[in-house]
Image (tube, rainbow over all chains, first blue to last red; front, side):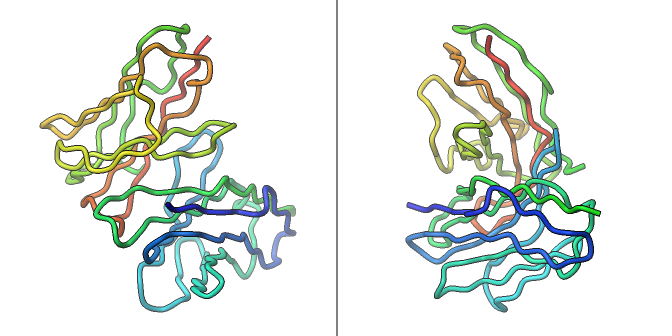
Length: 115
Length: 114
């Protein structure tokens, strides 16, 4: 079984400040980890993924995430937040040992960036 | 624009009815996924098809069924609809079937059951 926890329903930051959106996961095999962003009335947009290799992954729009195997975490970060980053963010996990693309998503974190 | 198209955009129907949601994957993508997003259950994986064959199954109710056609488009059929089936249904597609494949999401179909 696989699961994802996003412990914060809401994250508020001021524009220009760094932001972190937290994610922890559980999977029986090795994980593939993903971050998606959802704007109102839109589908999910891919931000970044961890498959293997460097634990620090860089993605779209200046976002990055750090894979920490010992803490089973994959927190999303950005050094300087923009008002336009305000959206709903989802972390997802897939089991590397399966031969299918079943994703398990967290409940989502609403990021609000204030000017 | 992800290249994944879903029709219709909105659907309003009554309890007990049956509806069909349609998805066209990105050009070249062989795998299609269906997800349900609702307020109480969040975003849940329903089912995956790869090149016409069922690849993985998630929390899909027996009242729901899906298929992928030879032209690779997919349909999700929901029958004996209940109020709790009201949700946003997303289709996603990927080139390959594996967990490493990047999935591209469509804009969704919003289903309202009255």
